[in-house]
Image (tube, rainbow, N blue to C red):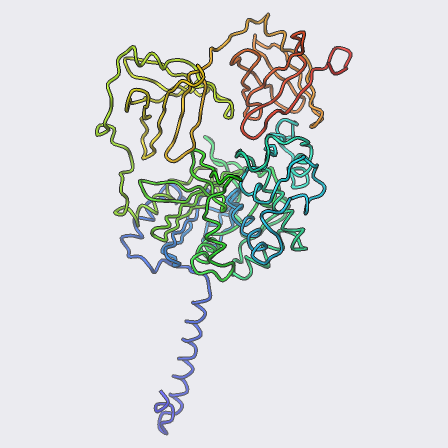
Length: 588
C-alpha cells in the first residue's frame, strides 16, 4: 500500500484508497464494540427453525417476545417478534426493554459477591451490622442465609396479602421492609432449614446500598450496566417513572389484550432490560470484564445450610445465581422463570455446551417452551433421553388389588398445606389433587414405589412407608428433596360444630383482624379489604384456606378446651398468631 501511495502518477488515488482503508478499519473496530444485531453465526435453515418457534408471537398487532441464543461467548440468534406498544404500533426489537421480575435477582446476588470480592463485606456477616433497624431475633441471620433462603424470616408477599393490602396500590420497598420488621420471632434457627421466602431480596439491596454508599440502582448502573454497555438496562424503584423504549405490559383475554399494570416497586425484582443487553451479560460470564471467573463459579454453585445441605425443591437445586440446576433429558441445565404483571421471562443454560437461550415477553404467557425449544435446535443430538418418557418400555411390578388398596387414603403435607388422595381404580393407583380436581396415574416399580405418568422427561416418584406407626407418602421429582406427606383421617364438621371456630381474630404483629362466620355452611373469613376466604377441614382443629397466604390454620385451645386463637402455617410463614377477641373487645 505504501508503494501505491508514493506513486507519482497515482498519489491522489492512493490518498483516497488510504482514506477508504481507514474508514473500513474504523467500521470494523466499531462493529467489535457495538452490540450484536444480526444472526451471522447460523445458516439459513437453522434460522428458519428458530423463527418458526415464534409463530404465535409474530403478529405485529399483538404483544410479543424477544429471544436470544448465546454459545461460548458468541450470539447465535437475537430477534424480536410482535408489538411493544399496541397504541403506538411500536414493534418489538432486540433493544426493547422488558421487566424480568425475579430473574433480576441474579444481579442482586452478583452485586453482593462483587462487594465481597472487593473485601467490603462477607457472606458470614450478621445482617444487623448493616440493618440495625431490624429486630434482634436472638439468632444471627447472615447475608448467606438471605441468599440461601434459609433466614427463618416470613414471606413478605404473604404478609402483604394477610394485612389486606389494596390490590390497586403500589407496594414499595419501604412497605416490604416495614412488613419484614414486624416479625419478632423467626420460623426456625437461620441456616438450619430452607423455605421458599423472598424476604432476603429487598434486604440484600439495602445492604448493597449501605456498603457502597449509593443507591442499589446507582451501584448496578455504574458497576455493571455502564461498563458492559447495557444501555437499555436499569433497576426501577418507582413504577410511575416514565421509561422510554419499554414494552408495555399486557394480558391476553377473550376480548383481546388489555393493559396489565405492575403493582409493586421492589428494586431487586424490578429490572428492565433488553434481549441485546441480556446477551451482553451472559457473554460477560464467559469472558468476564466485570467480575471474575471465581464469582461466576460461585454464582453457579448450590446454596447450602450450615451443615452443607443443599436446597432441592421440585424445580431443581437452588444456586447462588437464584437459578435452578437439574437434569434436562439427562443433561445438566440451569433455568429460571418470571411472571410479573403482563411480563414473562425464561432462561435456560446448558453448561456442558456453553449454550444459553432466553425469551422475554409482554403478553402474560409462559414463554419457557420457545426458550427451551431454541436450545433443542442446537442440542437435539446431544441429549441422552427423549422429550417424553416411553412408559411402555418401563420395567414395572405386578401388585394385587389388596396390595394396591393398602396405599389408599388421604395424606397431608404440612409445609405445602395440601392434601393428596390416593385411591385404586380398576387396579390402577391414582394420585389426586382435590383442590384442583386433577389426578395422575401411578405405575408400580416395586412393592412400595411408583412412578407418575407424565408427558415429559420428568421422573416423578411416589414411595410409601410406615414410620412410628403412621403411613407416609414420599414424593420426589428428579433430584428433588423428599416431600413427605402423612396419612390422616379427614374430619367433617357439621354446621353446628363449625360455630366453635367463628368469632373475631386479631394479629397484633400485623395490626389486622378477620371475622370468621358461617356462610353457606362453610367456615369463612372476612376482611374489609379482601375477598372472603373459605376453609375446608383437614383434621381436628386444622383447616386449609382457599387462598395460598392462609395455607393452613391450626386453632389453639386453653386448658378448658376453649378456642383462644389460631396460627397460620405453611412453607414461608410459620406460627403467625391470631388471638380471639371476646364480645367486649378484649383478648381471650
